[in-house]
Length: 100
Image (cartoon, rainbow, N blue to C red):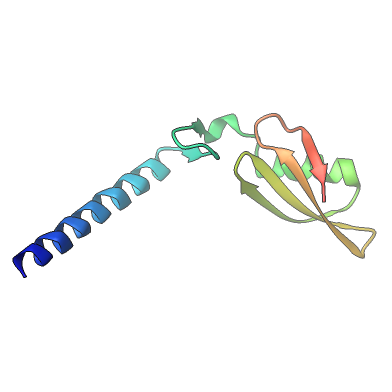
């Protein structure tokens, strides 16, 4: 019984420390990209607005949504008022990756 309480307490402590570490890291202005231990400063990324502008210039469509996923922005576009297409833009360089 005592061993079970000790294990539960140790687990709770480990969980609390890891959550606090994650929260502190998130506030530091860094984001995690694909590989463990690989972080870049958010200031090195292009803005969401810039990604939306690149996608709009490239497709001529209307921007519906912009999400940062890994090291790419996924920009959902409405083309010709009827088709929805997602454009991927490299978050560091602003280069168009491909269209889906």
